[in-house]
Image (cartoon, rainbow, N blue to C red):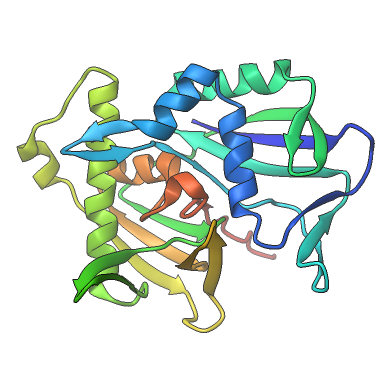
Length: 262
């Protein structure tokens, strides 16, 4: 389930955020949950084979801001909006309820109120879909080298990228089914597949280096083709593609086909 939310400055002032605002939006998202739900999501998530998954995703801010390099900030008009999605509808309902009932929503030094919430109609999921990234997707592996951990980020043209995307999607699907009370068997999961194929992607221009807290994260935008089980494609629509989706990476939307000009 996906919604589009819009927040407006109570004072009508420009909304000023750090240039690397990922963590700010992350904090805002958690403020929109009931405290008990927010605490459970943050600390525990949903367990699957010892891993904690959050099962939600959100985009970057949809409006274009003006960068102030001297202050390392980005200035928006008095309104910002972004998409939020989750494979569990009760979490979306909780998000909406609290967003509407909170009178003053703090976002850094900005005082905001929810000014619009729109339910986004889900696309018709098939075994092949053309998509475009609303936020960069990231795929990585972490290795132990001597006394420190090293993170290697993959590029979408590498076969490992698609393999990890498939594995991650299966985990999100299985975790969602468990949370809904209808677990799936390992045999069923093994029969599902998902492949991500670059469509319009440039390793130079689509590479995005972002910061979450003090961590550098490499991700990629662009247009891609998803081929595989509709159930896995659908779960990545709700929960995001790849890793770090609960901190704003990996949200996509269907790539709209241009109408033929007669």
